Image 1 (tube, rainbow, N blue to C red):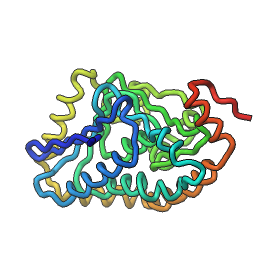
Image 2: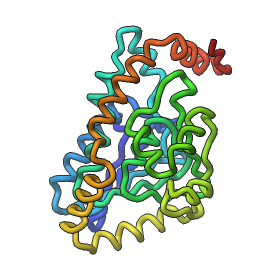
Image 3: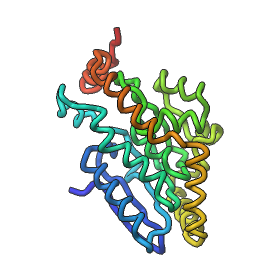
Amino acid sequence: MASLRSDLNNGVLTLTIDRPKANAFNLGLIRELQKAFKEASRDAQTRVIVLTGAGRVFGAGQDIEEIVAGGENLSYLKHLRETYNPLVLQIRQIEKPVIAAINGPCAGASLGIALACDLRIAADSARFVVGFNGIGLVPDSGVSLLLPALIGLGRALEFTFSNQPIDAQKALAWSLVNRVVNLEDLHMETAATAAELSKGPLGAFGLSKRLYNKAVLPNLESVLEYEGQIQEIAGKSHEHQEGVAAFIEKRAPKFQ
């Protein structure tokens, strides 16, 4: 069953993640997103891409049950090389505007995907959680670079260590998002922004993205690779084993 809905209307491609309950990523969903962005990059009819979540959750990050099913032989480095790393690069390198319409909680790898987008419009119900340290892992999916680039190193470290949510208004004050609107207005506000961008000079938009990528994120690809290498270490730790066990058992982890 498809976990990604796609709708092209007047040059705006809306990609809606629809994987109940929490729009968590699994391998199938990631491949659907990779395929969608690949096709969008080649499609002259697609001028703007909007990425959002179905229901009241943008995304809960990686599906932990899929991680558990991978067993002890799961390589986080290989997984990231095949999944989130190329997806983040696709979003940054596609020469068309990409808007994240963040309709609710956004955590872990879903946060990385949202941060990779060019613009972020958040509902007032949105909450941002780094998430990784909570299960004994480290930030990946570009979070280690994109989050401090937007909100500063000190804030990024605080919310990585504490695993506490950043609410929508704080996210706006810290430039994590471009604007905050009422949840019921999110679709209309995003559609209006996308429609306006779709009338713009697409070639110049694409070249501008190249410039900003070069100026601000010149090491993105190497950072994604290093995240994978460090995640491989964290993924073999006792802390991660305890974090996953606690998540499955719905209890607080006991890190020693």
